[in-house]
Image 1 (cartoon, rainbow, N blue to C red):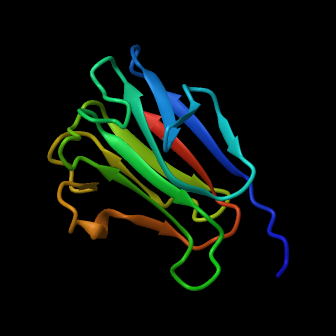
Image 2 (cartoon, rainbow, N blue to C red):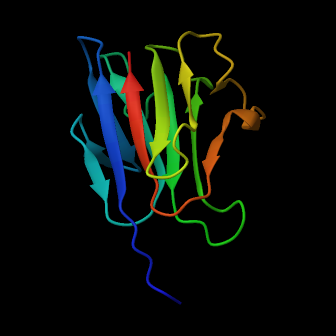
Length: 142
């Protein structure tokens, strides 16, 4: 099997004037606002803007969920979404976009009724996939 070169880069843009961006994977805080580089696949990471009212896993806030992996078969690549499934709830305008592959693919949520976020588990149509190798992700708050 060939060795894959894969570096996932997260850029955070926050213009809220308050709060701290968080990138978390499992029990680990990967970033509190600085750019983050993963030298390989990143599975099951979450990002949110900690405004003082969010739980560790984003409870009470708008959440961006992502898995960044190089596809090994059709449909097995990266996937990112915005979630408002309880106990999550809208807290700040949040969005994401892929770059270095799938440029222009992403989503924004500007209010609690946005159609681009999960509100119930069956809302799978809001997931944004990317089937390109070595894709990067930019996350924006406010």
